[in-house]
Length: 137
Image (cartoon, rainbow, N blue to C red; front, top):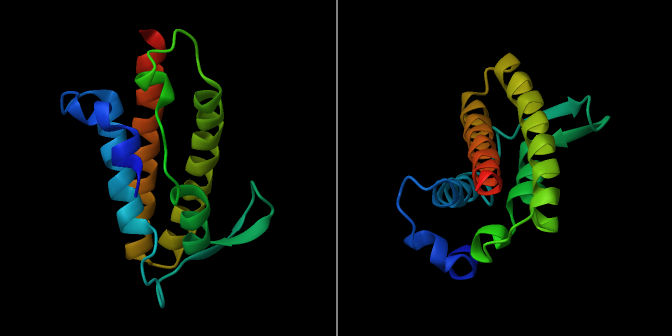
């Protein structure tokens, strides 16, 4: 995982800084949700927003298994960066998918996946706070 190296200066910020809180939550979420053996608990659902069947494991690989750079924070950008703009769109999509998955997991009494969905949803809230905090200046 290259997130630490890419965003090294941000990990020197105080523990309550929104960028650091988000990165730490993203890393924890990625460690807890990606590459796990989900046999017997992986949740499938039909996504109304995507109009297709999705599994939690495929969601995790698609939306959490990447290295992220907070370029706006790192470069002290005065305006929203393109990656921030794309991230804000992605955050909404990720949250919508996790709310759908959580509902299906709840219906199936799949508490392990409900907990993972809650973790992803919490991480998306920190992601939005991170972006809005930087943009407020």
